[in-house]
Image (cartoon, rainbow, N blue to C red; front, side):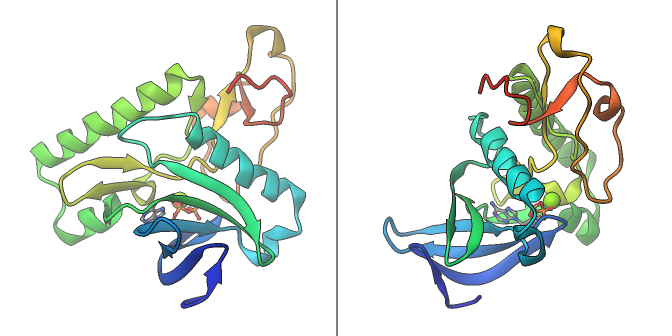
Length: 195
Ligand SMILES: Nc1ncnc2c1ncn2[C@@H]1O[C@H](COP(=O)(O)OP(=O)(O)O)[C@@H](O)[C@H]1O
Ligand SMILES: [Mg+2]
């Protein structure tokens, strides 16, 4: 992928990967500057369930406009691949920071407060992240926390919709208690969108 152009993004380098995609740093050849592009893996592209989940991730994040949540610019398909374009966060994931020298108490508190602030915003919008872990949290050089990866996010159901079944789209992920409470629905799957 390195050196290739997808839409108007020129891929510069791979910056990370997880269960649901490979993330590249890319140059925006229209506006200038860099973005992060997350690609849906080839093997999941034929699976409608995962394509929908990819769209839900983008919608969930887009609905949350907050300085501690990574900004989504776009979701699109080009040259046969599905990708999300988002703000390129220059920094390190929490697991990289912790592995390097652990965290001092004041650093841990500073990051925890920002993560909690992001979750307050998210929960106020009726969205639960469900996959908060060190690889999904980045910290910039200035100490600003950016929560990433709303790939497993769910939206709180309206009270009259409590009886419906949950749709589990996770891939080998732990189950936080709220995930199985029956109060949450996959983003975009219920037909009761309020985003
Ligand atoms: N916007 C971004 N800026 C910089 N690095 C990113 C960005 N988004 C993701 N990454 C890197 O890519 C990794 C995987 O991204 P993530 O969205 O968590 O994918 P997955 O759904 O596959 O877990 C992250 O742990 C991080 O290292
Ligand atoms: Mg992740």
